[in-house]
Amino acid sequence: MITVSHLNKTFGDHQAVDDLSFSIEKGEVLGLIGQNGAGKTTTFRMILDFIAADSGAITWDGQPISEAQRSQIGFLPEERGLYQKESIEEQVLYLAALHGMDKQAAKEALNDWMNKLQVVGQASDLVQTLSKGNAQKVQMILALIFKPTFIILDEPFSGLDPVNAGIFMDTIKELKKQGAMIIFSSHNMDNVTEISDHLVMLKKGRTVLQGEVQAIRESFGRTRLYVEAPNYSAADYAGMKGVERVEQQGAGFRLYLQDEEAGHAIFDEVTKDGYIPAFSQQPPTLAEIFKTEVMAHE
Image 1 (cartoon, rainbow, N blue to C red):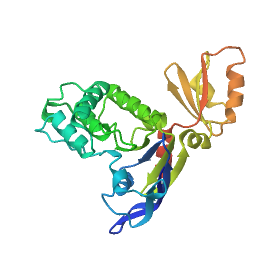
Image 2: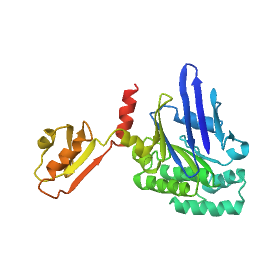
Image 3: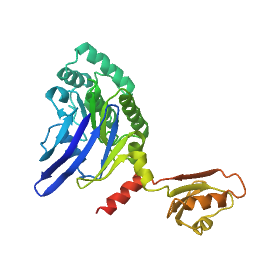
Image 4: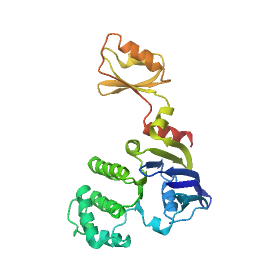
C-alpha cells in the first residue's frame, strides 16, 4: 500500500500542496484531479523524491520508500521527454537495463508493447519520425516495460484521439487486474469516472473532495433526468414541480431537478399512458461536480 499522510509543500509564499492524505492499495486506481496549478504534478514529484516535502510522510507498506522500491515505480511525466535522434529500441533498452532487465527479454517485451499499444512503425525508427500520438505511446512503454508495481501517470490521455485514448484506458485496466497500484491525473472527467476506484480533487493544493467515484456522485443527489416521452415538450417539463432547467438532448430532454424526489412525480406523469422510450435519473456527472466545486472554492 502507498500512503500519503498530511503532505505539505510551499514555494515561497505559494502553498502548492496543503495537508494532502490518501492511500492506494494493490489493484486500485486513484484519480488525482484539479485545475492547472492545483498541486497534482507537485504531488507526483514528492512521491518520486524529485523534490522534498516540507512536512508529512510518504510510505510503502508502512515504511519510507526505499531505493529498491523506487526502481519499481513506473512514471509517465506530463512533459514528454524522448531523445529525438535515437531509435525507439535504443531508448527503451537503455531504460530497461537500468531497471535490471536482460537485453533479449527487453527486446521481446518492447515488441509486445508496440503491438499492444498499436505503435505505427518499427523499433528501429528514430523518435523524430514519430507522430505525437506514437511518441506518447513510446513514452508509455518506457514507464511500463519493466513491470512496475506502482505506476504514476501524469495526464496520460493528453493529446490522444479517442481510439488511442481507449487503448491507454484498456492498458490501465489490465495493469489494475494484474495488481498494480496506479495513480493518474487527467482533465477528462469521463476517463476518471471510467477507470478510477477513488479520486482526490484538489483546489489550490487543498483537498475539496475525496472518496469512491460513484459515492461522490450519489452524494450530490440524483438530480439529472433524461426523458423521451411522446407529446411532452420543453415547456411541459419546465412547468413540472421541482424542475429548474430543461435542455433538449437528442430525441429527448435533460431535466435539472431541485431535488431527486421530484423524479417520482415526473415518472408517474410521463408514463400515465404506458411505455416511453427512455427515463433515466442519475446524479451529476463528475465533470459537472468538478465545475461546481472549483467555482465554490474560488
